Length: 234
Image (cartoon, rainbow, N blue to C red):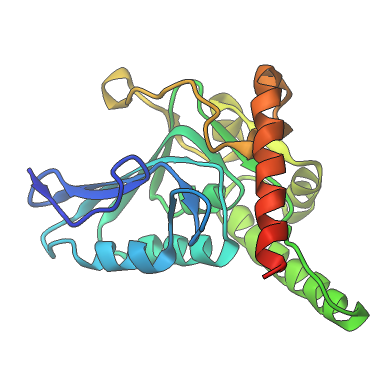
Protein backbone atom coordinates (compact mmCIF):
# COMPACT_ATOMS: atom_id res chain seq x y z
CA UNK A 1 0.00 0.00 0.00
CA UNK A 2 1.67 3.21 -1.19
CA UNK A 3 0.75 6.58 0.27
CA UNK A 4 0.78 9.44 -2.23
CA UNK A 5 1.86 12.80 -0.79
CA UNK A 6 -0.90 13.96 1.49
CA UNK A 7 -2.20 16.76 3.67
CA UNK A 8 -3.73 16.20 7.12
CA UNK A 9 -5.17 12.70 6.65
CA UNK A 10 -8.32 13.66 8.57
CA UNK A 11 -9.07 16.46 6.14
CA UNK A 12 -7.86 15.28 2.75
CA UNK A 13 -5.84 12.34 1.50
CA UNK A 14 -5.21 10.39 -1.69
CA UNK A 15 -3.98 6.84 -1.26
CA UNK A 16 -3.17 4.06 -3.72
CA UNK A 17 -4.78 0.87 -2.44
CA UNK A 18 -3.49 -1.19 -5.36
CA UNK A 19 -1.81 -0.48 -8.69
CA UNK A 20 -5.21 0.11 -10.28
CA UNK A 21 -7.32 1.46 -7.39
CA UNK A 22 -7.01 4.71 -5.43
CA UNK A 23 -9.00 6.20 -2.58
CA UNK A 24 -9.58 9.91 -2.03
CA UNK A 25 -10.89 11.03 1.37
CA UNK A 26 -12.38 14.53 1.59
CA UNK A 27 -13.35 15.06 5.21
CA UNK A 28 -13.17 18.85 5.26
CA UNK A 29 -14.54 22.09 3.92
CA UNK A 30 -13.86 23.03 0.30
CA UNK A 31 -11.59 25.93 -0.61
CA UNK A 32 -8.50 27.59 0.78
CA UNK A 33 -9.69 28.50 4.28
CA UNK A 34 -7.60 30.39 6.81
CA UNK A 35 -9.78 29.23 9.70
CA UNK A 36 -10.06 25.46 9.42
CA UNK A 37 -8.82 22.40 7.55
CA UNK A 38 -9.90 22.52 3.92
CA UNK A 39 -9.08 21.15 0.49
CA UNK A 40 -8.39 23.62 -2.30
CA UNK A 41 -8.79 22.92 -5.99
CA UNK A 42 -5.07 23.52 -6.46
CA UNK A 43 -3.97 20.97 -3.87
CA UNK A 44 -6.58 18.48 -5.08
CA UNK A 45 -5.43 18.77 -8.67
CA UNK A 46 -1.77 18.39 -7.70
CA UNK A 47 -2.47 15.17 -5.86
CA UNK A 48 -4.92 13.78 -8.42
CA UNK A 49 -2.45 14.23 -11.25
CA UNK A 50 0.16 12.47 -9.12
CA UNK A 51 -1.74 9.18 -9.26
CA UNK A 52 -0.11 6.42 -11.34
CA UNK A 53 -1.46 6.06 -14.88
CA UNK A 54 -2.42 2.47 -14.03
CA UNK A 55 -5.25 3.65 -11.72
CA UNK A 56 -8.62 2.89 -13.33
CA UNK A 57 -10.85 3.02 -10.26
CA UNK A 58 -11.11 5.95 -7.82
CA UNK A 59 -13.18 5.71 -4.64
CA UNK A 60 -14.04 9.11 -3.17
CA UNK A 61 -14.98 9.10 0.54
CA UNK A 62 -16.92 12.29 1.21
CA UNK A 63 -17.93 14.07 4.41
CA UNK A 64 -18.10 17.81 3.79
CA UNK A 65 -20.35 20.75 4.59
CA UNK A 66 -19.25 22.51 1.40
CA UNK A 67 -17.31 25.74 0.99
CA UNK A 68 -15.97 27.70 -1.96
CA UNK A 69 -18.11 27.25 -5.09
CA UNK A 70 -15.35 27.60 -7.68
CA UNK A 71 -12.92 25.28 -5.88
CA UNK A 72 -15.79 22.79 -5.63
CA UNK A 73 -16.65 23.17 -9.32
CA UNK A 74 -12.99 22.59 -10.22
CA UNK A 75 -12.81 19.43 -8.10
CA UNK A 76 -16.05 18.22 -9.70
CA UNK A 77 -14.69 18.80 -13.20
CA UNK A 78 -11.30 17.22 -12.50
CA UNK A 79 -13.00 14.06 -11.25
CA UNK A 80 -15.38 14.02 -14.24
CA UNK A 81 -12.43 14.37 -16.62
CA UNK A 82 -10.40 11.54 -15.08
CA UNK A 83 -10.20 8.36 -17.15
CA UNK A 84 -10.84 6.17 -14.09
CA UNK A 85 -14.27 5.03 -12.97
CA UNK A 86 -15.23 7.21 -10.00
CA UNK A 87 -17.39 5.91 -7.17
CA UNK A 88 -18.40 8.47 -4.53
CA UNK A 89 -19.24 7.19 -1.06
CA UNK A 90 -21.06 9.76 1.07
CA UNK A 91 -19.88 8.65 4.49
CA UNK A 92 -21.44 11.48 6.48
CA UNK A 93 -22.53 14.63 4.67
CA UNK A 94 -22.46 16.08 1.18
CA UNK A 95 -23.82 19.59 1.62
CA UNK A 96 -23.79 22.73 -0.50
CA UNK A 97 -20.99 22.58 -3.10
CA UNK A 98 -19.99 19.14 -1.75
CA UNK A 99 -23.29 17.86 -3.19
CA UNK A 100 -22.00 18.93 -6.61
CA UNK A 101 -18.68 17.15 -6.02
CA UNK A 102 -20.64 14.02 -5.13
CA UNK A 103 -22.31 14.08 -8.55
CA UNK A 104 -18.91 13.69 -10.23
CA UNK A 105 -19.19 10.00 -9.45
CA UNK A 106 -20.14 7.43 -12.05
CA UNK A 107 -21.87 5.86 -9.05
CA UNK A 108 -22.95 7.68 -5.87
CA UNK A 109 -23.43 5.59 -2.74
CA UNK A 110 -25.08 6.84 0.46
CA UNK A 111 -23.84 5.60 3.82
CA UNK A 112 -26.09 4.70 6.74
CA UNK A 113 -27.25 7.92 8.38
CA UNK A 114 -25.63 10.02 5.65
CA UNK A 115 -27.28 13.22 4.41
CA UNK A 116 -27.19 15.52 1.41
CA UNK A 117 -28.15 19.20 1.41
CA UNK A 118 -28.70 21.65 -1.44
CA UNK A 119 -29.30 25.40 -1.15
CA UNK A 120 -28.90 28.68 -2.99
CA UNK A 121 -25.34 29.97 -3.27
CA UNK A 122 -24.48 32.84 -0.96
CA UNK A 123 -21.62 35.24 -0.41
CA UNK A 124 -20.54 38.34 1.49
CA UNK A 125 -20.21 41.64 -0.36
CA UNK A 126 -19.42 45.28 0.15
CA UNK A 127 -19.35 48.32 -2.08
CA UNK A 128 -21.78 50.68 -3.75
CA UNK A 129 -25.08 49.75 -5.40
CA UNK A 130 -23.39 48.85 -8.69
CA UNK A 131 -20.97 46.52 -6.91
CA UNK A 132 -23.84 44.81 -5.10
CA UNK A 133 -25.88 44.45 -8.28
CA UNK A 134 -22.91 42.81 -9.97
CA UNK A 135 -22.55 40.45 -7.02
CA UNK A 136 -26.22 39.47 -7.35
CA UNK A 137 -25.69 38.83 -11.07
CA UNK A 138 -22.74 36.54 -10.32
CA UNK A 139 -24.75 34.67 -7.68
CA UNK A 140 -27.52 34.12 -10.20
CA UNK A 141 -24.96 32.87 -12.74
CA UNK A 142 -23.54 30.41 -10.21
CA UNK A 143 -27.03 29.25 -9.26
CA UNK A 144 -27.87 28.45 -12.88
CA UNK A 145 -24.67 26.44 -13.31
CA UNK A 146 -25.36 24.43 -10.16
CA UNK A 147 -28.97 23.83 -11.22
CA UNK A 148 -27.70 22.59 -14.58
CA UNK A 149 -25.47 20.00 -12.90
CA UNK A 150 -28.29 18.85 -10.62
CA UNK A 151 -30.71 18.63 -13.54
CA UNK A 152 -28.34 16.56 -15.71
CA UNK A 153 -27.61 14.11 -12.91
CA UNK A 154 -31.00 13.61 -11.22
CA UNK A 155 -34.60 12.76 -12.00
CA UNK A 156 -35.76 16.31 -11.25
CA UNK A 157 -36.72 19.24 -13.43
CA UNK A 158 -35.11 22.66 -13.11
CA UNK A 159 -38.28 24.23 -11.59
CA UNK A 160 -38.37 21.46 -8.96
CA UNK A 161 -34.70 21.92 -8.18
CA UNK A 162 -35.02 25.71 -8.04
CA UNK A 163 -37.73 25.36 -5.40
CA UNK A 164 -35.62 22.90 -3.42
CA UNK A 165 -32.53 25.09 -3.29
CA UNK A 166 -34.64 28.13 -2.38
CA UNK A 167 -35.98 26.22 0.62
CA UNK A 168 -32.63 24.58 1.60
CA UNK A 169 -33.49 20.91 1.22
CA UNK A 170 -32.01 17.93 3.05
CA UNK A 171 -32.12 14.32 1.79
CA UNK A 172 -31.53 11.07 3.59
CA UNK A 173 -30.33 8.04 1.64
CA UNK A 174 -33.78 6.89 0.52
CA UNK A 175 -34.77 10.38 -0.63
CA UNK A 176 -31.46 10.96 -2.42
CA UNK A 177 -31.81 7.66 -4.30
CA UNK A 178 -35.44 8.35 -5.19
CA UNK A 179 -34.55 11.76 -6.63
CA UNK A 180 -31.49 10.55 -8.49
CA UNK A 181 -28.80 12.18 -6.35
CA UNK A 182 -27.50 8.68 -5.50
CA UNK A 183 -27.85 5.17 -6.87
CA UNK A 184 -27.73 2.91 -3.84
CA UNK A 185 -27.07 2.55 -0.13
CA UNK A 186 -23.68 1.54 1.19
CA UNK A 187 -23.14 -2.13 2.00
CA UNK A 188 -21.82 -2.98 5.46
CA UNK A 189 -18.39 -3.94 4.11
CA UNK A 190 -18.07 -0.55 2.34
CA UNK A 191 -18.70 1.64 5.37
CA UNK A 192 -16.24 3.53 7.55
CA UNK A 193 -16.57 4.62 11.17
CA UNK A 194 -17.71 8.22 11.60
CA UNK A 195 -17.54 10.17 14.87
CA UNK A 196 -20.77 11.79 16.02
CA UNK A 197 -19.32 15.28 16.29
CA UNK A 198 -20.32 18.81 15.35
CA UNK A 199 -16.72 19.99 15.22
CA UNK A 200 -16.11 22.50 12.41
CA UNK A 201 -19.75 22.18 11.36
CA UNK A 202 -21.48 25.56 11.73
CA UNK A 203 -23.62 24.71 8.66
CA UNK A 204 -25.49 22.16 10.79
CA UNK A 205 -27.75 24.96 12.08
CA UNK A 206 -30.04 24.29 9.10
CA UNK A 207 -30.90 20.77 10.29
CA UNK A 208 -33.56 20.81 13.07
CA UNK A 209 -32.91 17.18 14.05
CA UNK A 210 -29.44 18.19 15.21
CA UNK A 211 -30.58 21.07 17.39
CA UNK A 212 -29.02 19.51 20.51
CA UNK A 213 -25.70 20.95 19.38
CA UNK A 214 -27.10 24.45 18.95
CA UNK A 215 -24.86 26.07 21.57
CA UNK A 216 -21.76 24.76 19.83
CA UNK A 217 -23.20 25.83 16.51
CA UNK A 218 -23.87 29.37 17.75
CA UNK A 219 -20.32 29.62 19.08
CA UNK A 220 -18.97 28.58 15.67
CA UNK A 221 -21.13 31.12 13.89
CA UNK A 222 -20.04 33.93 16.22
CA UNK A 223 -16.40 32.91 15.87
CA UNK A 224 -16.74 32.93 12.07
CA UNK A 225 -18.37 36.38 12.09
CA UNK A 226 -15.67 37.80 14.34
CA UNK A 227 -12.94 36.39 12.10
CA UNK A 228 -14.58 37.99 9.09
CA UNK A 229 -14.80 41.38 10.85
CA UNK A 230 -11.13 41.15 11.90
CA UNK A 231 -10.08 40.24 8.37
CA UNK A 232 -12.05 43.07 6.73
CA UNK A 233 -10.69 45.58 9.24
CA UNK A 234 -7.10 44.96 8.17
